[in-house]
Length: 334
Ligand SMILES: [Zn+2]
Ligand SMILES: [Zn+2]
Image 1 (cartoon, rainbow, N blue to C red):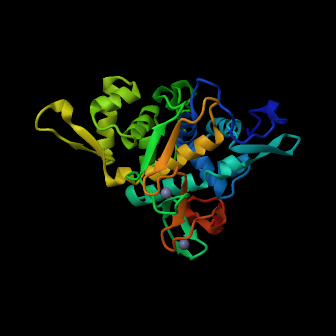
Image 2 (cartoon, rainbow, N blue to C red):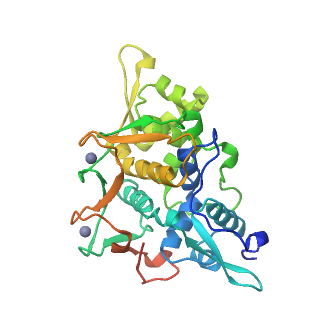
Image 3 (cartoon, rainbow, N blue to C red):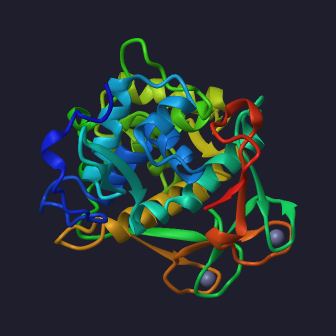
């Protein structure tokens, strides 16, 4: 079995991103739906490391045919990949990143960087070398408008016309959760705790954009008290939130992002910016950001921690580690 799962799609017109339906999921829900899936991130990571054909991914790890087929179809539907027929009989396809897919490079970079710093034993993640200065580096979030560093403390958000909280969480039915025997490789375990569940992603967004008390989270998430309490406990155990107990009343406990939690902000803001660019809603944007340092609208970019130069995909060398590659020893750029 190969990629015969979609015999009707040989004439598929490649699109990059798409306009969303009015009143439905907004750009944040779409971005979280696509990127809060560990197999999708795994497939994208191998795409950036050179995988193009179905067999490239099958060789890269223990992914099942069912999971790979469904994820490639979903990523192609979303306009992240173009599907090009390279052989007629039997039909075989290559999956190439569209511009929309290519722009995910900085999100993957920020996910890897956060996991490398904050999650222990991440030996299977690729190393990133900056060709400009020839050093291993971490990406640093900056503001495009002023060029200064940016972070959770100096970027403020305002909800736009399509920004209702209810439209920010991907519908449960649209999520392609892993099931059965094929489990994701668990190379991004903590990222998935934060993004890989509709309530978690919503909770994280609420924490970044002002929720402090249990009631703030419950109101924004529109979830059952059990779910809210469970997620608050999970995030506290992960060290992403910390509790500040009150001596007065139990319900006055407040929750605050830790340094580890704030360090995830570049992932969140770059995901939202990507979604906004490629999956617009007809009513207008879900969210707008402002950089308090300069007062302008905030757009993210990343710079090299070692030399300060703005990162470009072609200057980032991804050095796949020998134990986890299909093309060992061949570093590729984004
Ligand atoms: Zn700025
Ligand atoms: Zn550098």
